[in-house]
Image 1: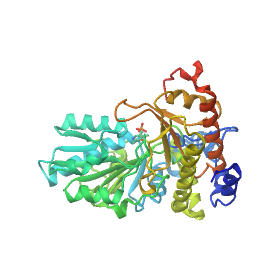
Image 2: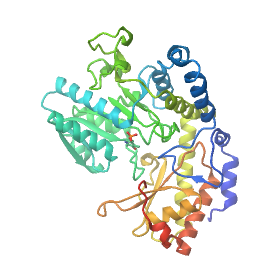
Image 3: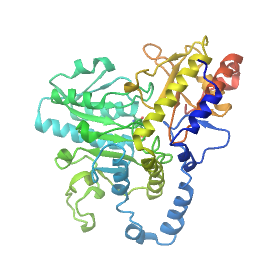
Length: 425
Ligand SMILES: *Cc1c(COP(=O)(O)O)cnc(C)c1O
């Protein structure tokens, strides 16, 4: 039952999404398994960004707010993202960063809880959630007299006591790639009277999401990972329409005002999701983000998110099988669930020794993954590989594991240059 390079090539030949790879600039000789951290550049981005710079900024200048639709861009790009996350048109804006958007929705959720169910003063999240999410929650809890309770995934339901205002989770865990059952967890939280806030940083464009069907309360997500929007791309925010008009978000800037160009001294929030904007947006970055989102919408005529999901699972299954077959005896463990229902679009391997150096040795060979430090106790050091079905093929997976095998077999990772830590891992 050995898997061969020919088998992988045959899988590529049958792949209905294969042609979409042409939408991206993939550096020669690189197998890029880090699209879960910074997506690959769409081929359309340089020309589009140049157009925004030279024509819209360079020539049309301030007229571009109207002439090129700059002012309505956050909502327009938001509507495109909405198609990927089961949100209705007019309920998503592309704006600010994930951290800032989380601050806005978590604050609004705390206001809502205080109004509807006073006495609920707890936010529950996972200890292994992405740190910025936990830091933002800590800051808000300090300011507002709430308590942040951090638990392990299997402790979530027991933590949903009657004093919990908000359950705040990241749908797909950034370290392990483990995915929550969004409808079930949302229903469980709401049945105890808590509001459900999802971070979709590792979900949007990676796995099917239906916020409307799950009846979630709030969601945020990232523009530069699977949406391929470029470094520092604006993030997005969604609020269930039934809540959107009830509270101000705390960063009540003029772009969230009902009539910003009346320049009135008093804040009057715009209806709906528009009030979740704050101030002037980075138009050049928004243009690049739109190119990235368009690469995902291009998949709509090739089977859409369902086809992307099928391929993503086939890629991660293949990677896991090949690692088991070819790297046996090298001390690698698997941190990502085998169960498809619990797996995002990445695979995380563990190793007691040398995880960082192995990743560095792979990068030197053109196989780009990344390393996430463990905490020594419950979580081991992780070698993280993201599989972006828009531009990763089955043959790429074969070569990636072939390189991993060689790095381990030869002990190449022990070389000093692979053991020097860089600032960004
Ligand atoms: C990537 C990521 C972020 C990034 O936040 P920024 O504000 O863009 O730096 C936040 N949360 C999660 C869960 C992430 O994976």
